[in-house]
View 1 (cartoon, rainbow, N blue to C red):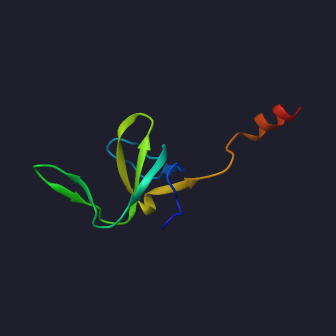
View 2: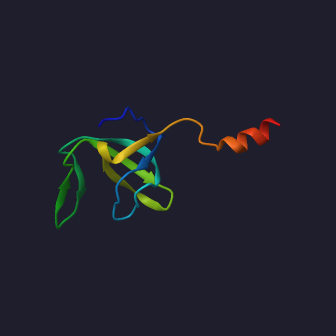
View 3: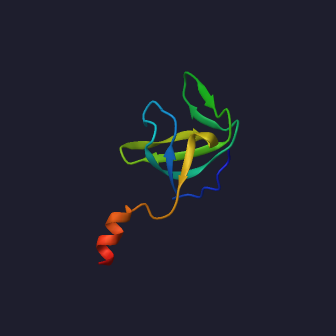
Length: 89
């Protein structure tokens, strides 16, 4: 599933990653295309197996790559209804 993310959008991870657990909120950084080199070192190179996104997490300095189907968009106001009612009163 491809989402129309843009840099700065919030997303929810729906799979575990080595450095980011599932159901974590991340910020979309940039688009990643299938076959693009994600990591290149003297020992090996890793190429994206599918289209996806580079994301940032508050607790991690480097960007992490996720496939299109591994992120859920977070849009709108997530403030609990009870909190909204208290503020309106």
